Length: 114
Image (cartoon, rainbow, N blue to C red; front, side, top):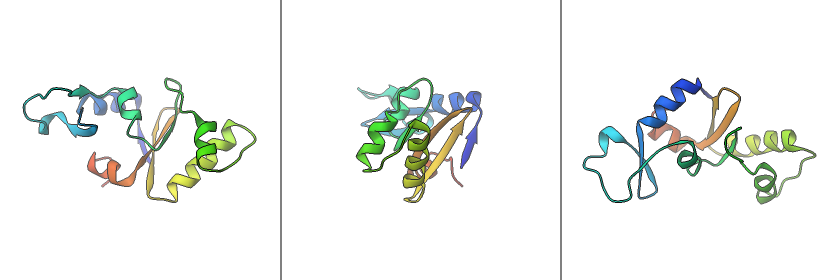
């Protein structure tokens, strides 16, 4: 599990750029290319397996259905989703009360895992 403060997370996102649907560090990007996009929470969310946050609807019940799991409520659904992904090579990123699930490979490439 990785824990960042909201300020740390915001600073982290500011270092990223999306190019050709791939997250890269701005410092490594070289000259700007057509289609380059600064990374905000919405862009970052497109690279996640699942999320539960106040700012973006993570469609938790839909994700649970896609995984062919069932739950009585959204809290139980999120616990099942986390369990599913964390058992399959993913990492949990906590930012305040928000939680994001990303692949271990992505977390390592972005320097979030050592």
